[in-house]
Length: 310
Image (cartoon, rainbow, N blue to C red):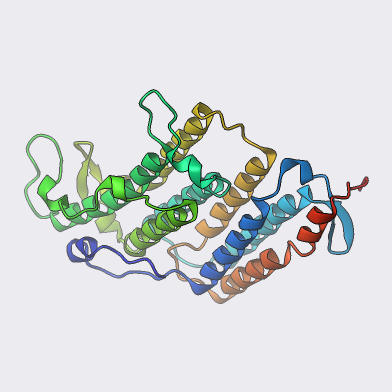
């Protein structure tokens, strides 16, 4: 894993960390390579003829074949991991990574210019919303680290808020989503991966530590389950921003979302957990299948031959 956990978290919430499994890294890379190719396809090309496994089908089926591949692999992965112990903390980061892939489904088909397009009415641009997602994820990690470190201190009087000066070293939120769409997607991955590397290993006692959220006393577990809902909340906001920008969703964009949503479910089966041998084989197989899937697709798009009945 290349993402680096902020020292603040390591200093105030010391404990074991977990590395991203190499097989999962390869599966992600294979998916992202496929998405790069699929996202460039125009709706008008979906009915072109394409051969899959020697059978005459259409280009649209490439999207659904990716979906089927991932969903079948999710079943195999679930069965392979059935005997492996999990925890609430690991389940919470699993939910967060599923939400992250729903967000990727939206981002994978965006143009770079969309990030800073003004939706009007004082609403945030997409880049501002993405900066808030990334900064919020960092803030949840820092805040929970503080509350874990302060667990033996007297409860605050009044609102449950961490001292603001503790967070002076956090990056400015406006700087959290710099670069083109591909760079922003990597930043999203980095912050979810890095924060999960520590919080996936929280114990039940640590999950039950009382901290603050919006001034209310809540458990660290509450704050962790908020990771997923926060990402999803602002993915909805990004969808609304696209509506305000008049960006009509294409069929390809909907299909890409189906694929990334399925991959989120797939990844959540192992994210933050030690991967057993049978599960490792599933990860390698799905990476191989996703890489092989688009064979002949470029030629079919260039030929532009309408598919017959199949």
